[in-house]
Image (cartoon, rainbow, N blue to C red; front, side, top):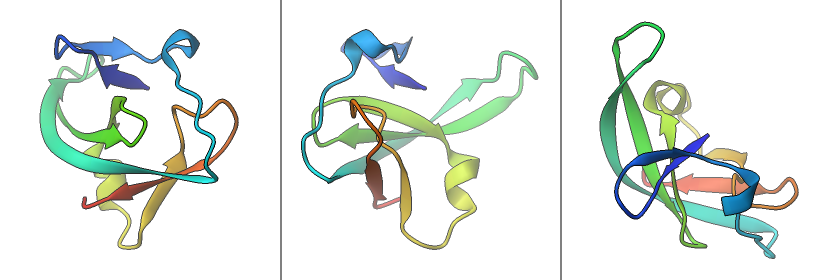
Length: 90
């Protein structure tokens, strides 16, 4: 997992930059889609960027999100233990 740091550079998500979430369900809102180069295939990959309600931003491969017609939930990358995160407006 990765996130966009304040300098708009992609950074690796580590335990040191995880924010604790106390609610039972969190929400992340779609911000925009960006293109990055896959380091293995050297091909273009669309990454959907989301803003977490706790303030952090993160990205998910857009092809994963396009596979679902229902509401999408993923494990919350900013929670200290497993909680669902709902992705809105993708």
